[in-house]
Amino acid sequence: MDVDIVLIDGIVIVNDRETVRSLAIDRGKIEGFYKHGEEPESKRSIDCRGLYILPGLIDMHVHLRDLNQSEKEDYETGTMAAAAGGITTVVDMPNSSPPVLTREVLDQKITSATTKRYVNVGFYAGIAERFDTSMVPDILGLKVYPHSPLTDGVNYDIERIRNCVQLANKHNLPLLFHPDSSTEDEKPETREEFFLIHSCESEVNSLQAFLDAKVEYEARLHVCHVSCAATTRLILEHRAEHTLTAEVTPHHIFLSGGDFSHDDGVAKMLPPLRSPYDSQMLAQALCKKCAIDCVVSDHAPHINSEKTMPFIEAPSGIPGLETTLPLILTEVFEGRISWVDFLRCCCSGPAMILGIPSKGILTEGYDADIVLVRRQEWYISGADFYSKAKITPFEGRRVLAKPVTTIVGGEVVYHEGRFMVGPGIVGRVPIRKV
Image (tube, rainbow, N blue to C red; front, side, top):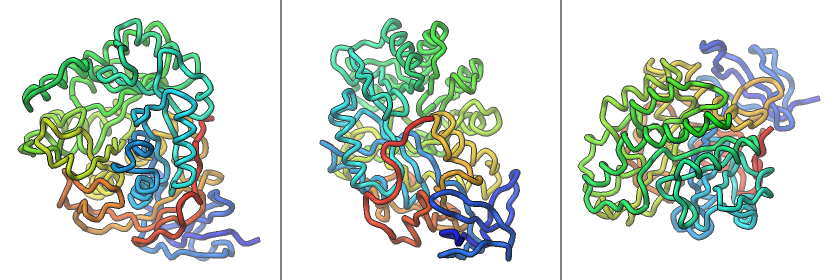
């Protein structure tokens, strides 16, 4: 019997080495790998000569907005951006409007994503005073924001943190947290105050508070968007792959605060950009020391008029779904990141942390979530983004990797700048853990 698709003579990575192989897809799964001339008969074939056949990226930290913030982004434009960026699975954060604190809001997001999606979409939930346990089967983790709680009047003191850690442990979910020990009462009036309030000291103190709570309950903690060298050292001291994991963004690895005037919000994000030393140490923590498990975009779109406001008035956050793969693969092609580290940090690592089955690895029987990439020099331009957010601090940056084709569940979604299917056809919503 014919298989559905054969990707012919692409470059696959085997034991950190580039090898030419064909890959067969059948009924949404990877059927097998073949040498040239030994491929099975297929209903369709794609010539992949000169292209890299890679697992689709899993981005476990995105803000797709939608609902009351659809002017900034919705599930259609956000997942189109993901597909165009070679990302086949995204996990949406709960600090939306309204926030995901109840089954009702989660269902609203699931319904919207189901009809608009171009890739797989998973969800996190926040923690209200009384946690809605009915959400557990349809979420991949819990997320808390100590510096900006999702419910009014909540203070993340040690008792509150312990309760959150205990809850995550009870439901066998990772507890993701934004490491920032500042409070909502600390409202900066100048750029200098903004950076002082959201300092590396604040990040480290927050991490330490959660580590202290973890001693009592052996929950799985996940540190979001690490930005400081001191934070990576503390993570390394408490390294435990199954109970303490961490992520980093491309902008914290490749950019530093001194690269920008900060007259407007183009490079304003939380945590803020740090020093060149911090960026260097983050890169080492990701690859050489393995203190950081994965790369995420922290895609946080805003409309252009907001990002061009004066810095102190502009919202924090930048688009990232369409720049992560080109930026990280450029490091691979220029020899600063190994293939093994790329595949771990962008594909298999997030799948392991979230407990997502059959994703993140190119192997027989796994989901056919695949990106074909061409080694090609080009320059990032926000005007070309599918995301509604067009302003990026990576504007004009030279990169060497171009996503050409994105396949989700065995279906070709995106190919050479065109979408081959409509919204709501491919992918799973919600993604569920093992």
